Image 1 (spheres, rainbow, N blue to C red):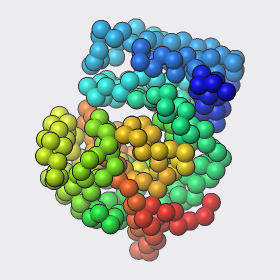
Image 2 (cartoon, rainbow, N blue to C red):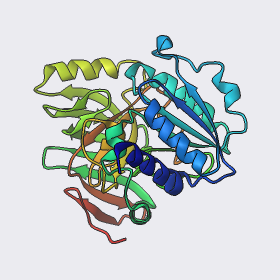
Image 3 (cartoon, rainbow, N blue to C red):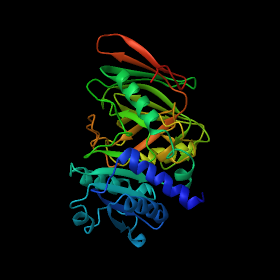
Image 4 (spheres, rainbow, N blue to C red):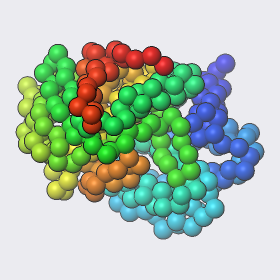
Length: 334
């Protein structure tokens, strides 16, 4: 099987197992010059499933996009699936958030969001996994997180943070229904923590969105749900992250806790795949207003920070607690 056939097979696998499309679906693909070969593979796979497909290619001279192109709005009419297959320009995060909100206004649409997708991601195994096994692990993990009031996370590198999550549901991106959004590749269980109930320190040592792999760890101190200090031996990293998170009042407010469950995903510096790696955790700061499990952060950005080998303890409403992950290893059966 050559590269093109492998990309097609990965696309068809995701359409069948995550989006669960059929011949009644109408698919809109938003793409660009960088990702058009991948978009074409999804288009062909959807055609082979009997779907009707429209493709909108972003005009490169108009980038970075700040607003949704007006001609995109009428293309949403009567669609049941939207796929965003495009390069992840940091300057376009506000546009991508606005576009996701516009798509989610239609409760009949399933949205697959794939900023930063590459041929390597399509080929390296994170899209070609046992989806039934991954769904089983997601259900088991969500069951253990039900009725959680807070989450304690520690690592050997110095992470020690307590997140309030009372009444904030944990959801997964492996089962996608109408009105919901997922990433492809998929493979995480996540929630929107309470915006004012995060206290402690997180040492991020894997990668950061729009930065890539880290040469030196970044220590982030959080109080009242908000970043109050960055520390690192890499002064350039501190300056860059300070600038990236200094865009509005909510950009430094906690937005997400995510736990990776994809056994085929690998750390490469591409957050689209990295945050799905089984046994990792990530915390995002910024927007979470579209999270099905709740969220009140309306920042113009959403940026993920990833770290290895978390130890995670769940504190429940009945005052009991349970260790569910120890140094990146799951302590539950599924």
